[in-house]
Image 1 (cartoon, rainbow, N blue to C red):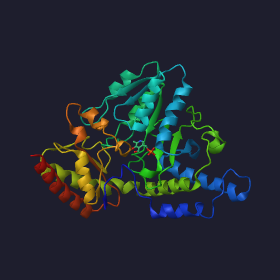
Image 2: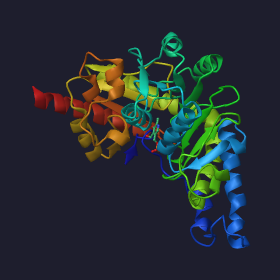
Image 3: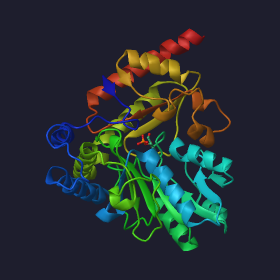
Image 4: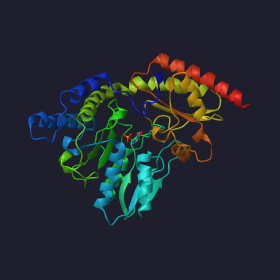
Length: 379
Ligand code: PLP
């Protein structure tokens, strides 16, 4: 198998699994218990909290563990709305993940108003549009760090500065950025920032929400006293430990992440664009994650192409994994290039640290021969 779908999920690293194992086998107590067998696990959770905080330059007390980034995104937006009951507008972008967009859509049904900022053909946002959209009724701005489909990076530092200057809370979905680009929350003054473990080699089912120390927050999941009364529910100690360990490893690899993934990604992209006719890159050439390339193959149905790639053992996708079973064309590519049918003919290849040169050479060969075959079948 050649796995080029790291934006969908990543494999659990052996070191991460090893760190988690005792908490599945021998150390299975409840951290809230009064006896030591359980209560000693509190310390284990705090170590993981420090490791996750370190990945983004935060204070550990600013990290709340959640079940996934979908929960983190929902919780942050809800907290901001609750803190501003008189303000009924949310600003987001047309290219956010469904974990933000569908939550906003549900809020619209409750009477909130949502402004979805457009992007240009490269997937970039105009800061002037954000400035103009911030009116007195805006409670929160939710704009992502890196796009999951194209890898395009938003200017989060500038976005945060605008929100701060205008007195509006800013939530950032940093799911695809964590472990791939440096995140220093002291430099980017977001109020809330969402993370999920499974995009950086932790297991699925554990996420985190950063909440700036002075930002308003009220629980989204009501229950017990866990997470300093901020998120009810018995902590999943093994998953939290896994996320902590994976965050520690991701931080270690961060300095060479770009150096290792970009050359392979560029090789793949250049080979496909130059040798397969009627192809087009989606997303800005440079303002992009080093591991992601999103390419339209004009005239080819992406679902048929993915099936054939899959038969050759190549895993890629046609957009967000969360929407893969829907018939809808990519809302991200549609927002960038509304006139065309690109949104049904695109493939996202997202590489990881373990992707090799020979993987890329094989994928290039398969892409060339499969596209020839598919196009010959149409004509
Ligand atoms: N936000 C972005 C940008 C994502 O790519 C994803 C996952 O694909 C999510 C949020 C949702 O993450 P989770 O699967 O942890 O809910």
